[in-house]
Amino acid sequence: MADRKPIISGNWKMHNNHLEAIQLVQQLSYKLTKEDIKAVDITIHPPFTDIRSVQTVLEADKIPVGLGAQNCHWEEKGAFTGEIAPGMLSKLSVKFVIVGHSERRQLFGETDEMINNKVKAVLKAEMTPILACGETLEEREADEAVAKVSGQVKAGLAGVKADQVAEMVIAYEPIWAIGTGETASPEDAQQMCKTVRDTVRDLYNDATADSVRIQYGGSVKPANAPELMAQPDIDGALVGGACLDADDFHRVIAFRDAG
Ligand code: 13P
Image (cartoon, rainbow, N blue to C red; front, side, top):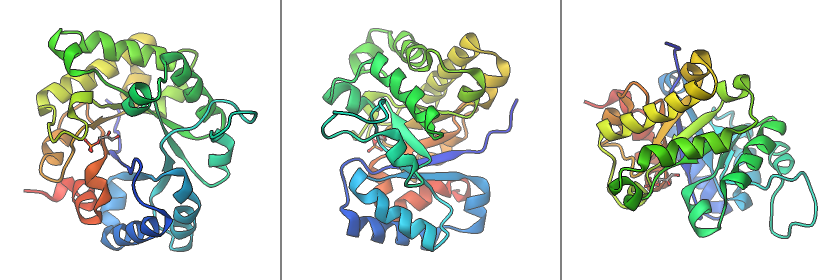
């Protein structure tokens, strides 16, 4: 099995103006140790208006945190009022883009086809997509979680080559666990992350499936991170609420120090 380096990402959602952003990044940087950086890849995903400020701080202070965005459009330019092109992000040293977050799917009507276009556009702009997938509570209760999530993964990866998928990140985020304080049990999270990996295996091959990194997201906190991260198919976390506090986020990053 491939040796996958854990990747822990902070999705700020619609929090922090650019001044608050600078403060949070600096607070986090003071806490990061050499061991953290060696053991874990870290990305942060501020709102678009913060990206330039965060880029400046990361570069000036040589903070080893990957800059990320929460979304982008799939076209390179054009009459798309209010949208941001992938190339605009890569020009600002953005390296990771979350694509298909459930809030984008549910609140902003993003379809599997749009999300697939975004995945391809992010790759074309030489950034790494973090493709998000996850089922609703109703789907889970109706025993449809596996079908839903594997369908989202298949649709999101349509037309993407194996070597690109191998370098990608896929985030499994059950919608009922997002912002609710309700976490999937480590066993359920593992089962669904394995479903994601098996889907990649069916679509591509063993090498691709063993290389792609799969995150769990949904009420990840310092207290539950160690158990989640101990699961064989969980290679990281996509953190919402807990990443808004530098200490909490750092304690998630330092999950291996717990206990
Ligand atoms: P919470 O950690 O606040 O549940 O959010 C998870 C999430 O949606 C990250 O993208």
